[in-house]
Image (cartoon, rainbow, N blue to C red; front, side, top):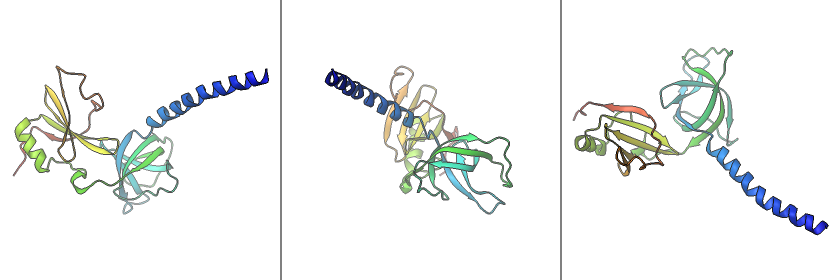
Length: 197
């Protein structure tokens, strides 16, 4: 009887452990979903490091729960994060920033020079594609640790990595394409203008 109970217990554990591990992985996949850059505001009173989101919002970290306890925040680092605004808190920081608790914070490794954040389509491949594709807008967003550029027109979206390699084409006729690329809004870096020579 005992051996049968033991076998049942082992079989039960064999079934539960993978399910538990998968649930933990799914939860981990849903953390640190925002992207930003650490800015040094130490020249402003009582500010120090502030995190600027992709949308340009400033967040003053009052509490940080980094995934890696040895991680030390530093200027110009690219980071992934989750945060909660802290209400009813006061700060002497003179920069208009939202006080925040960072519930998740991860350092994104540095990019090669060709993949640094750009606020204008200055790369040669971008200028060439603007001439060829005539996009209405170009947006930039983060996908994991990579920068993706989306060239958008009314009929299609074309996704490129930061070196100009085509990642995916989406159009209204083939809506199932590019499922792995979020159809989300990134930071607008180009709209309707011809790039000066």
